[in-house]
Image 1 (cartoon, rainbow, N blue to C red):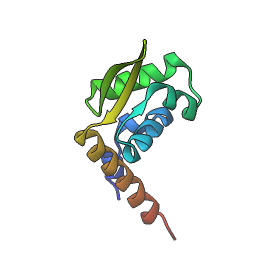
Image 2: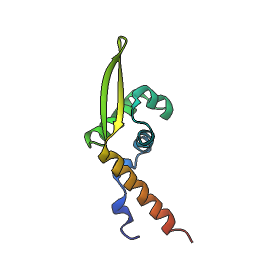
Image 3: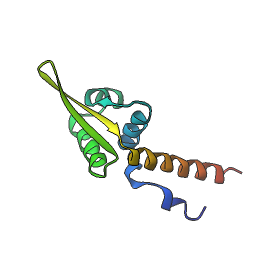
Image 4: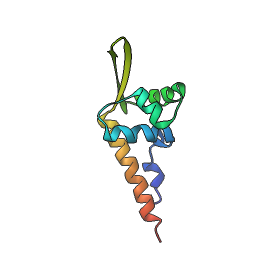
Length: 100
């Protein structure tokens, strides 16, 4: 239990990135506007968190045209999914370990 914090991934300490990864764990792809609406975020706030996850290669980005508009969608990578599962496992271990 003493080394609990070594298993917590700092990438998921922020509630926005936690929300993004939670959504991507149950959806193959999810688009920018869907994230924005579901999480109640501004374009800039969401974009900065998505960029952080993309930089550390936990998500991948796909841009395509739908009609004349661009659609940006995101998918969790294998590394991102594994890191998120490990993060959740660490939290579960903490919860179980503090139960009296």
